[in-house]
Image (cartoon, rainbow, N blue to C red; front, side, top):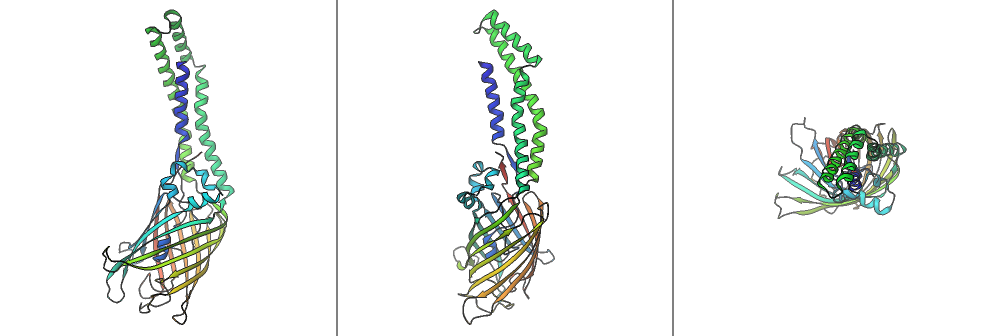
Length: 398
């Protein structure tokens, strides 16, 4: 009976450990910060759907020979990943249930950016809050499903080691010898004797030592293989998508927390067809903004933007490399001013290059024409380097 209890305890210990085993997965595919959009320092205005780490940080440095410190930062949180990560397995990210899609894609966004008044040259900060959700999420591609099945198969092999070793030890010479001594003590001295207790303890200790040694040896190789597979695993999505985002921002003209001015708000839809890796993705955006920073090419900053509303419409073509690490996009957006007889409409055209430089780390470069000169004084050319770091990408493979 005690032998059976020991075996059950060891089995439960190893199986429980692997049932809760988590691996670091490369989830971050593209920045998706609504407030960075409102503060006008997101690399792209039209973003692909992205799978999320618990938290990620975006840092933007406008080009000045990289001699100045970045002045734009964004932090984005995924409640599903951050607060319920133990319940959210990797396979859950391929769910098509509406509630799962909304909850898993929900992002709370905050950001801060330093601005300079074009007249007084005084520097001040703007910050904001926003959120983003997916209304329609593309499915995993066949390549992603195949990679996940390979992960699952390796995990299953690790769990199977416990059962295999348990069966093998039944015919192990050493285990058999210790079992014989225990049975001999039972016959000669009885179950309640000190001799039997010692023989039984020796048997249990030997069995556990052999079990642990063999399992650890076989597990090490498979466990490393699992970690290698998980580190290379990325989610490729193919199909139709539709995202909803929005938020508001506030300025701190005196850089004091007790004095702020709510100055901007917006909401937008981004949707289209995602082609996956080594293919083109085509997306479109429809966006409403109230008092945006960039209205048209006004390098002097003298045109008032108070109570101005705009509507943006545009499209983007995105190419992703076969391994999913490199992205190239070209986007064009037309901005129409809704207030009659105020100022003319304008447009934005930007190309963006991004590369995954490590697990949940991405570096991007964007260059093009903005609606006005908000990103670089003296013209309507925008150029900047953006670094995104994702934290909390570990997922259970159930």
